[in-house]
Amino acid sequence: MRRAVGKTSWLLAVAGCSAATPPDASSDPPQTLAAPAQAPGLPASPSSPPGDGLRPTGCLRGRVHTAPVELFDAARRELGGVLPPSVRSARIDDLVASVVAAGGAPLEDPGSSRVVVLARGAPPSGPWAVTTSEVGFDVASATEMVAVGGKDLWAAELRVPPDRSFQYKLLSGAAFLEDPLAGHVAWDGVPRPFGVRGEMNGVGHPAALAADRGRLLSLGRQRATSLGDDREVYVYVPPRYDDGSCERLPSVLFHDGNEAITRGDFPGVADTLYRARPELSAVLVFVGLPSQDVRSAQYGFGEGYRARDYVDFLAGDLWPNVTARVRVCEESEGRGISGASLGGLVSTFAAFERPSTWGWVGAQSASFFWDDEGLVTRARTEPKLSTRFYLDSGCPADNCEVTGTMATALRERGYEVARVTVDGAGHEWSAWRARLPGMLTHFREGHRSCR
Image 1 (cartoon, helix red, strand yellow):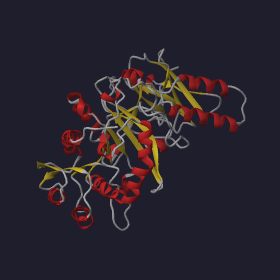
Image 2: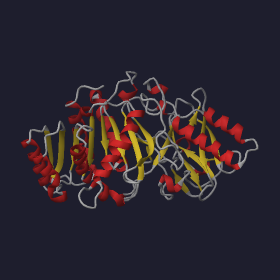
Image 3: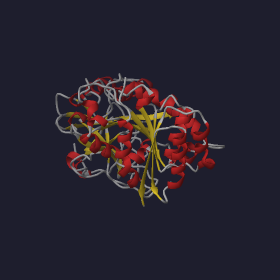
Image 4: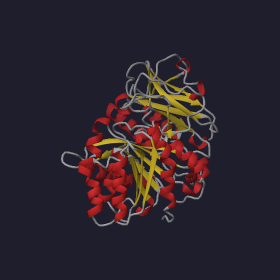
């Protein structure tokens, strides 16, 4: 059944989406893949064996799948009967948790064209529906979702051949919204004002994505125990991850994760680099913020700031979830941490705070002036770490002088340091994106082993 409806996804407040902006209406999915936010009540870190990203695949792109439609079919049979409200709600909870653990939405049947998209709860501003890149995200061609055994679960059935990847967003009234259950997603390509979170489309049939491009997975919303909040985490796996070798790859963790994806297009840059030089391939972990309002507080250190709690979250809460679900190197030499501006500052801070966790730091335009150049002092006075450093900046106005001071301090202590400068480059994502290939190359060229 098709009807004209507005645009949205299931949990507006949770997905953090702007109801006013539509997805990219192009019929071909954008090349940058990303992932969804997680809804309340979903497992914070659904478990699955390492080796695939979300579901066992045999390490081959053609075996990558989202959750199976059998999960929905079984739940629909049970919900069609007479059930007490508490039992019905618990069964829907179980379905949602099972979908997340099995690879996320949309639910698919690899043997047919059948695809199922789910939404939970009352639509926020109009009838639930779903629109896809198959129809150019046309609202008039959206597929209406129908209630399943009550008004708390809604579903739409689509037909898309399994050899064709596609993108989608949920709709409600006049708002496009993300599907917080999507296991693979793509930035919708819509530019947004500074400070406004970029939005993602869900991706169906990930096995049919181009083999020479990576995938971006969602780890859902990860809880930061020490900070008392949670945030979205996305993981880019390069083409080499799906080449059948099942090898573990080195990894780099990036702060400002949503910004790095939607403003910096770091996954797209990585695709270009790794296509040309697959031996440099690495897994990239993008860690978002709950809000831009807490950025200085969580990336800064000193009295009243919480960088230490943030680093505790990265090493204690987040990293075990990453290693449980993605094939990455275990030793610190194969783990990098990187960010720009305050992200570069907290990356360096993390290396000093947790010297056995990260063996490489990539700091772009880092705010080393912070706390009266506190990290420069630590570099000069504290015991030398087994850590390599990549430091870049524009010059003269992009934290150039203080970055040079930090590079000198590190070199004087015997650290391996790459110092890169670009005349006239600004303090902005376009500049950090331009320097990303060199930074990722430095990371891998100095690292050979992995277990």
